[in-house]
Length: 126
Image (tube, rainbow, N blue to C red):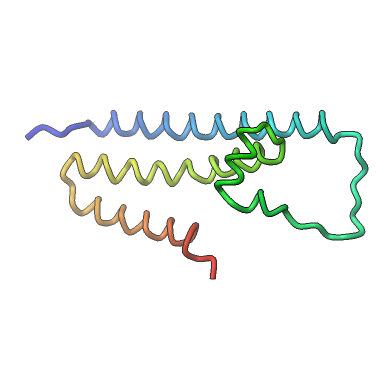
């Protein structure tokens, strides 16, 4: 039985996925940074009191909402989320590619790696 994709095709898709993910996230961070400077560039920072991130920048759903409404800090935060999500998407795609090639050993190993990634991003907040 012939493999669904060749190794070269998988490498090309992964390379494109990583390139596009990094470029889109960089573009969003740059656009958010420019918007932030245009709107708040003349303000003087007050470093006497520590202020953490606002609650809307700590929740994925609210970050997406802020980014879609062209909130500068939300766009920057969303770009950083995409940057983090890019290698996770690569691992998820690799699971699919190995499954289509019917390579059980690599599917199992990649599922373990994917589980550790998800745990560190989602479940490790205790």
